Amino acid sequence: MKKIITTSKAPEPIGPYNQAILAGNTLYTSGQIALNPETMLLVLDDIKAETNQVMQNLKAVLEAANMTFENVVKSSIFISNMDDFALINDVYGSYFNEAHAPARETVQVAKLPKNVNVEISMIAMEM
Image (cartoon, rainbow, N blue to C red; front, side, top):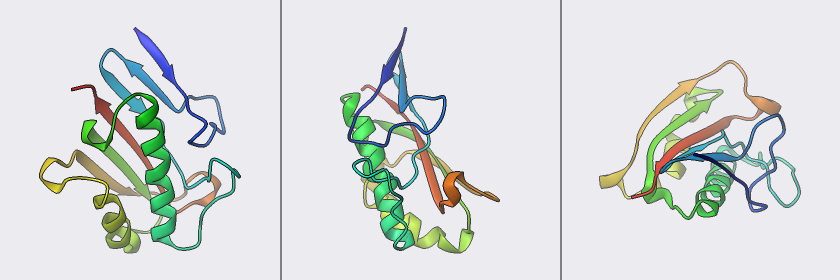
């Protein structure tokens, strides 16, 4: 059974998709960018602030499904410049217990929605 997960604590979708879908015990989040959910303005002060906003958005979506970052089993990180990898990784890593961090890939792409620098999606499971 498929359940749509939504929260006002993360940005509303900017296209024909939902913030997340819970299928059985598995949560699939849509990619999050650094939109502030209160203002719907991008947080682009620097790459660390941008990544932190992305992670806060994902945290809100996970919480709406009664999960935390401990439930995440897979992350996909899309970045516009691989030179930002270390800074993005520092912020991303601060949200996880390194011993139990999820599997992930990080891919440089030509362009992201709204010309942001980072987008992250996750798969989480109820444990």
